Picture (cartoon, one colour):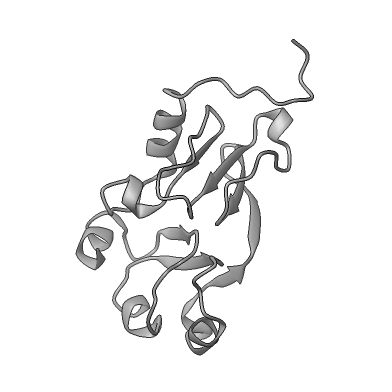
Length: 143
């Protein structure tokens, strides 16, 4: 996985890991990975392991809302959410945890490495996959 990561991630790239980074000490892995690594905590991210490697993570959060340079709003969380900030305005939601068993739609999908051939993917690749999924319908939308 480290080799696949470094084949597509350059040293200056920003990488968002959506949790369950490693069942072991994070530091030996983080030191070998290209990119500026941001962690969104997962249920298996042991607090001792995370704290021990805190200096190698660019940031650590439970949930993250970001806006990309093209204006796309993203909500990043380890868990799949039914609704999220600005979802009714087209914001996207990326999650892990479910190992491909929680279906996505045109605005959300599982980005866990086991769903993407154990290789990090770009936002362009994610948007291309979202475009193939069923249109999102929120409960508060008009028929």
